[in-house]
Structure formats: structure tokens, C-alpha cells
Length: 345
Image 1 (tube, rainbow, N blue to C red):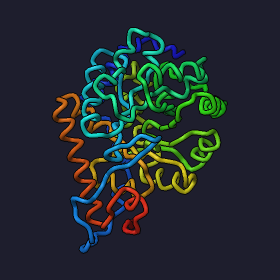
Image 2: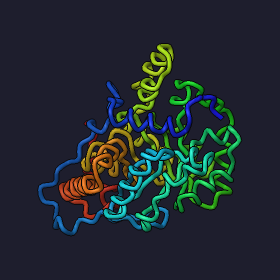
Image 3: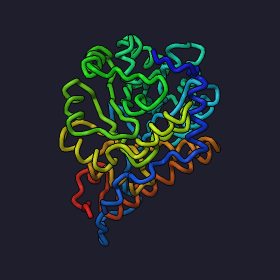
Image 4: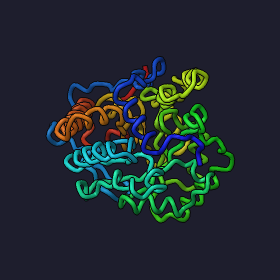
């Protein structure tokens, strides 16, 4: 395992503190969505009240194609955040991912910080482990434990090679990892989603993941939270801080990644995340081929305040998405995904 001498709980608390109180957004890289425009249709030929956001993924119905992206767990304060997020997801009918569950796998006393089914019995819930752990003694057994720990509907394996490379004691033995992912996909018995953490997925990697049997890809592109920036704030030395800062804006912008991956694996469900600001951005992502759109940093800041603020924030995004669909005459999510009313500027 990682030789980083901080405990899992300490590390999770550092991540929470940094994401809530420091500016770790991309400085120069944007999501790329500003380069796309939905073409207004002045005669939409439908009523706003009839616009439906409903969708289904992994056989689970959602009231809107939105995902609270994986963020936290493994510390007492993280439980409060996760319960708030899950309560809001249940109230609004959207999906939710948990933060990396390695802490709960290695220390069962921390498992409770991820367990949210008591407040969210019906949501699409995604478990989460770092894919690199499959090269460090983890197997399908730990993956199954992660799913069972939270009664999840699917498992996310996240890719964070740059984050690992710039941190103290990071896990950097990535050779042969694709084969390990393929083994999990074949044996787990639940859908496997592979996501980046903010540096994007390329077309070549998407094709590799499809051949390995993954059920969906979250492109998690650059333009939002930079985990290199987070590690710069955590760095125990000036050397490591400068090392991490060099990669602050590393990655493929979300829109570019989504466009490339959609072409590479045209039939695979895709999740778009990374710097998504609002429901109009979400509409653009779906028009570019996404099945779900993930929000992380905005949800974390809302959840730190209250359940009510989180629910209101989600409802605002939903209404922005609904009006954007109305504005181009798309009566449902399938119509939005297949719209001709999107142009690249």
C-alpha cells in the first residue's frame, strides 16, 4: 500500500478542508463547454410542463440525468456530508457516487461514513475504489466488499495517475492495470464504471476500457477541480508543491474528452463531469452524448451548508436543464441527446 504516513482519516479530512476552503479550480484550462452553443428555437412546439428529464441507467429510473459525483468518506465529518448529499439525491431522484472506499475496506470502523442507504433507499448509488489498488493486492474480493458495504448498484473504479504521481508516497505502479480491470468486470456481478478524477479520458483509453468490459465511462475532464492542485496544498515539501503545481492545468477539457470518447465508443453510456457549472452546461453535455452529468465541487459546498440548500441547488440545475431543452424543442432526454441544435463555435 501507499507509504504515505498520514492516516486514511487524516487524508480524507485534508481533502475536505482543501476542497471547501482553498481555490483548487483549474486556472487556465476550462471545461471547453463555452465553445459550444445550443441553437435557440423560437417555436419549440411543446409546452414547458411537458419536458421530461426522466431517464434510466443500469436499469434504475432517475427523475433527472444528474449525478452527485464521488467526493468523500472515511472520516466522521465525511459522514455528515455524505448523508446530506444522499438525502438530497433521494428527494430529487438523482444518482450519487461515494468517495473512495479504501479507508472503509482497510478499517471497518470507518465503513459507516459511506453508508447512506438509510436516508436514500431508492437512488442509483455507486461504490468507488481506486483502480490502482488492483495493482497493490486488491482483487475482485475488495471490489465486492465495496459494493456490499453500501448496498451499491454499481462500482466506480477511478483513475488518478497524475494525482498519485505528484503526491508523497503515491501509488505509481500502473503497468498491467487494464488486465486487472478486465478481471473485475468479468467477475464482479455488478456494472463497473471507470472514471478519471479531473484529467479526462482519451479516445484510445476509452477503446481499451470498452474492450475490458466496463459498463460506462465517466470522462471527468479538466476544467473543474484539479487534484494536482489539491496535492500541492497537501505537499510536505517545497519540491513536491512545485512538482504538483506544474500539473495544475493538466488534462483533456471535459467537452473535448466527451466528444472524443463518444466517437470512440458510440454505444457505451457516458457520464460527463469536470467543471460543469449549471443546467445549461448539463444540456450541452447530453447533446454531446452523455447519459448522465456529474457535479462535485458545487454539491460539496452546498452540502456543507444544509440539506435544504443542497436540494434547492439540485432543483435549480434541473430547472435550468429543463428550460434549455425547451429552448431547443427537446421534449425528453433522448431528444436532447440526438438534437441537431448544437453547434461548435
